[in-house]
Amino acid sequence: MSEYREIKGQAIQNVTADPSDNTEGQVWYNSTAGAFKSVVAGEAWSSSAPLTTARVYAGSTGTQTAAMIFGGYTPGPTIATTEEYNGTGFNTGGSMNTATRSQGSAGTLTAGLSIAGNPNLTKVEEYDGTSWSEVNDVPSGIENNAGLGIQTAALSFGGGNNGANSTTNLEYDGTTWTSGGALNTPRSHAEGAGTQTAGLAFTGDPGFSTGGATATESYDGSSWTTLASVNTGRTDAAGGGSQSDAILFGGRSSAPTNSQATEKWDGSSWSTSPATMANTSSNGIGSANQPGSASANISMGGAASNATSQVTTTEEYNVSVNVITAGAWASGGALPDSKRDGFVGSIGTQTAGLAFGGEPVNAETYEYNGSTWAVGGDLGTGRRVAAGFGTQTAAGAAGGNTSVGFSAFAGYETYDGTSWTEQNDLNTARASAAGAGTQTAAVIFGGGTPTFSSAVEEYSGSSWTSVTSLPAVRSFHAGAGTQTAALATGGQASGSPPYGIYNSSVEYNGSAWTAGGNLITARTLLGGAGTQTAFIAIGGDTNYNPHSTQTLCEQYNGTSFFTMPSLAVAGQNFRGTGGTTSAAYEAGGFGPGGANVDTTEEFTGETLALNVKTITTS
Image (cartoon, rainbow, N blue to C red; front, side, top):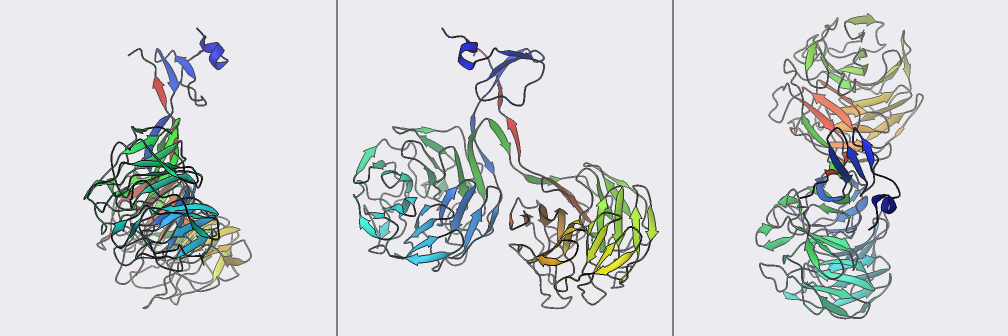
């Protein structure tokens, strides 16, 4: 019998604490716990950032870190929009030429394919990573068909035409569609995996029934062969992988019941995985048909129970030695009182935050340690909507309003962690500007004087100097970064209807402003945390009057914004926001009903931990 040293090339280590760098199968003895331990690969689903638009019967393709979802059916009409996933969140892609749902799909994020769709379309479109182009049609109209392969070597099989399920199989070479070998079992709403010459077809609707098909078939480039059935018949499922290593998840086993089950295919049979999806709402009717792989896949959108209960839910499936804890917002310590309209900017960190001022106009200051807020020194002059920046022990407060009405203020004060000290005033009194930088090297931009302004000023540590203006007036926006690498995003162009709410961002390099990426959803009165190239846009208002308070959060990577986990409770006009893209906070403001709140929410980004198991004899 082989010894462990011969198999692994090393002896079992005797340690007092579990190592953090072990590979799967490595065994060690933890003397503190008095047990042998090892790292084991596990299967699990975890939540990810939501779609921007809830949809069902959509097409999709790509991998877990570079995917897209396109078309589909919303609570309103069939849509043409595309969303792209970068492994963290979604941003907006190019729109299809024809709004489509229930189509077959194949390819990758940068070379995608949408095939036919409802109502019995013949249209085919190709995606190049930016835009969609119409190409040669399929020979006859079909919908609820499945697709697999790549853009230049794809299959479209099954589907329905005028109420009858089909065995039709079409092959695409990147230009022309030709007939391939017919399926053995007619079906619609099926799933596919693999390639044009080594494909796999499974599940679906065998005859517009309330149940789902169990049949599995493989394709060799000319004909289909019937293989072992799936364990749970279902329709409108999702999956992907290869002909010898595939995954199946979600779907509808009987109307209106959705399935949370996951099954794995090893080339000869299906087995039920211990990994169960967290939400039936993420795998319902028309979940995205996602090639992906059998060990790293993604479920996007779908419906909770029927075609009119579309969701934005996204879940990722992984086979990994790591336990993945999804990023999320959670409740933090409550502020001592409920106020809104504090500062506009990003101050401090999640464990050393700062909130000051607010409406009704006050001079209060509170310090956050990651769990509770404590009273700090009062501002010299009470104010609301000041531009804020810096850290908990070296912060700045510039401008603001000194009354509930509009009374632009030019005062600048600095905080040392104990008390505020008055410094030289701004050149131009303003409120609702945004700020970035440090206590002694700051920049503030925009705001109201009370007329909305594009003016920008920099602080040298002793005085303020007017510098290059914003490209356009902007107020009630968010700011972050440094004096030489600042970001201004969102906000509005006017204090009167129609307000001109921005989705745009602009970036400052210390001398000039240039266009940055656009928010997916335009909003004002939002919070912000992070830097110019790693920023979170938090909550806000998409309408202003009447208010439409949001839970939406988006992350910026210096090029584009993409979705991230939403706030637990909608918020805007925060009293304080700050931190980083992996550890942020927001506090105060007002909620969906318009009332001031004292709540704090903290964001913790996705974390990984080794899946360590204790070895037993049982």
